[in-house]
Each structure stands twice: as structure tokens, then as C-alpha cells.
Length: 185
Ligand SMILES: *[C@@H]1O[C@H](CO)[C@@H](O)[C@H](O)[C@H]1NC(C)=O
Ligand SMILES: *[C@@H]1O[C@H](CO)[C@@H](O)[C@H](O)[C@H]1NC(C)=O
Ligand SMILES: *[C@@H]1O[C@H](CO)[C@@H](O)[C@H](O)[C@H]1NC(C)=O
Image (cartoon, rainbow, N blue to C red; front, side, top):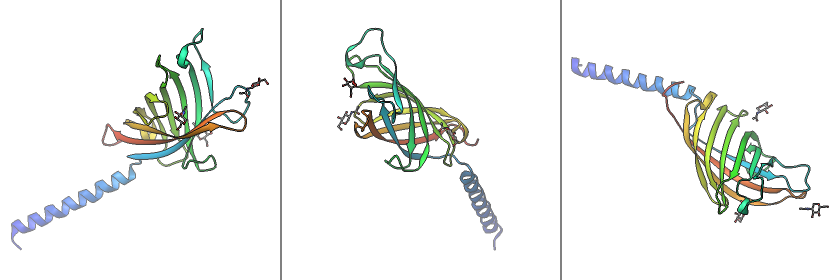
């Protein structure tokens, strides 16, 4: 074999080896590119004492039109499927504030905890949601397997209604698309 051909062959072999090694590293790295979960919102009804995960936790000193200024605190389950009996993956905790004078918009700040899955950790989403419409907000950072995460969290309203004890409930699908700022943890 000509020396040039041998050099090329050797270089190619090294290149393949490096590719294989780096793909192993990427696989050992637990950081996800996409995750989909379902969440169940249930706002406490006026006479309800159970079954809810969201309560009115602040409001303006005098009542405003369109719920303006009302603040709700929530602690919702994140589920694998759109069913309360499906696998629990974690929780999302935070607040939303009715933030538009005309109504229909809430400002949400929330932290997602995925602690029964691989990857594991927390990440935070902050931004506006348009009631009854598909809405996206930025992912502003995370911890553990989500350390240095950026991305977009898109929520899609699926259905809503009133449960047997008078809580308002709604199902949402949450789709997370992640990007990570550094190449390795
Ligand atoms: C809550 O209970 C009060 C007193 O019994 C009743 O007047 C009211 O209609 C109930 N509200 C709802 C939403 O069931
Ligand atoms: C994380 O998991 C532990 C153990 O299952 C549980 O006690 C805790 O409440 C979980 N945290 C959240 C935010 O779900
Ligand atoms: C409940 O569902 C209806 C019909 O899809 C929708 O118009 C409405 O915005 C939803 N309400 C909330 C609070 O999500």
C-alpha cells in the first residue's frame, strides 16, 4: 500500500474511533432534547375541601374586572399520559397572575421537577399564557441533568370542566424542547 493511502486509512480509522468515543460520551450524558408530559390543573371550588391543587393566593384590595391582579398558587402533578392514574413523573409548582386588563392572559412563573425519571432535576419556565390557546414560554435554567438548560416550554390546553366537588379542572399537554449552553457538564 502506498504511504499516502496508509496515512489516509490511519487518519480515517482515528476519526471513526473519535466519533465512536464521542457518541459514547453523548449517550452517557443524561441531557434530553425533548420531553412531553401532561399536567392536571384543579382550582379549589368555593365549597370544596379536596381534590384541588391550585388556590387563589392573592388579589387586589378592591375587586377588578376580568380577574385582573388575582394570583393563584399551584402544585400540579406531571403525568406520562392524560390520566390521573398514569405514571407520575414529577410536579410543577409556581404561580400565575391575571396580568392583562382585558383578561385572558396570565403571567406564569413555575419550576418543573422531574424526579421519578431519567433525566432528573428541575427547570424553570417564565412567561405569558393565553387562556384556552397554545402558549410557549422560555425555559430559563435548570439543575442536575437540566443544568444550563435553555429552551421552550409549549403548553396546549386539552379539556376542562367541573369535578364532582365543584373544583374547576383542566388538562394540558406540555412539550419541552431543550438546548444546553455548555458542551459538557
Ligand atoms: C356553596 O355553598 C353555599 C352555601 O351552602 C351555596 O349557597 C353556594 O351555591 C355553593 N356554591 C357552589 C359553587 O356550589
Ligand atoms: C421528589 O420525589 C420525592 C420522593 O419520591 C418526593 O417526596 C418529593 O415530593 C418529590 N418532589 C417533587 C417536587 O415532586
Ligand atoms: C375551557 O375549554 C373551552 C373550550 O375548549 C375554552 O374555550 C376555554 O378557554 C377553556 N377555559 C380555560 C380556563 O382554559
